[in-house]
Length: 156
Length: 171
Image 1 (cartoon, rainbow over the protein chains, first blue to last red):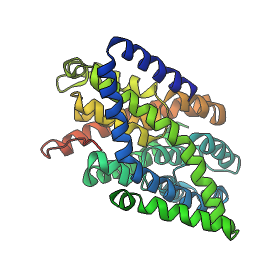
Image 2 (image 1 turned 120 degrees about the vertical axis):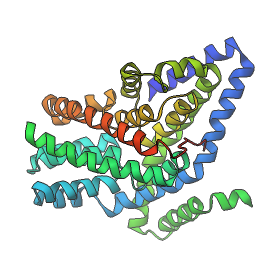
Image 3 (image 1 turned 90 degrees about the vertical axis):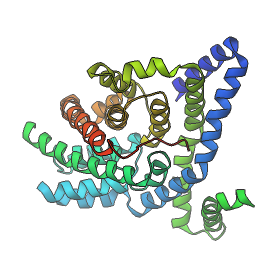
Image 4 (image 1 turned 90 degrees about the horizontal axis):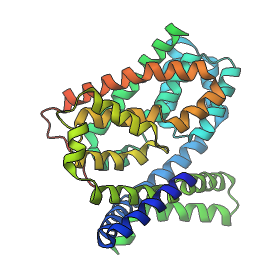
């Protein structure tokens, strides 16, 4: 985060020195995009916080810990697709899952869907790619995650 | 009035959280705390990201980007977008605006989706975190397996969208 602040500040500085007018156009453009996206982003964050409340870590551990094999992957993929957990919570959670007996392949499926498939972020994604393409991308990523789990199982 | 309509859902949500605090409704308070955690992460990160994207838009000429990662680019272009994605950080929805600007500057469909795949799964800041919690062997293997799978999905998306007038829209 600090790095991003520093990088942005440096770019702004260089840009202003080079051409202040151009810089203003760029900044205005960027912030306009941000403001256009803000209502749907806030809606998404509200949904995310409700889902995180409805599916606490204990629930994830309970469901993923019990199942194994294909069933385990499907549950992991499903949970990973609805949840949107930032990395700094997801990885400690995964190491707890492994200690409670969840297979590494299942964890790989969970992580991949968590990062790659976002049912709650679909409205935001659709703003850029349109609904149909967004749904296709998410569905494809879902199956890709299962495939990754399969390969992990073979190699581990 | 128009502004109110645009923000009606976030306002209703905040009202819900506010009432939860007023009436000491524990579940609502927890949801409010969750929201605050995500909001904090987003509210500084995204505007900075968008400023960078705006600057990128005015300074970087289309020809330059198109030459490297556009229609005519091969493996080198794919390598470049993967490298770019790996150096970034943040949640996937932060990558969509970047995908938009790459598209606008002439990046091809395949590389757009390979970029998103790489951004989501093999960002270096995330990988270092992953190694810490799940071990080097797991992370390395997951990265090596994930990479070809997402390059493949890039090709599939390109094939699927080929004749569909695909575009990345400005929000």
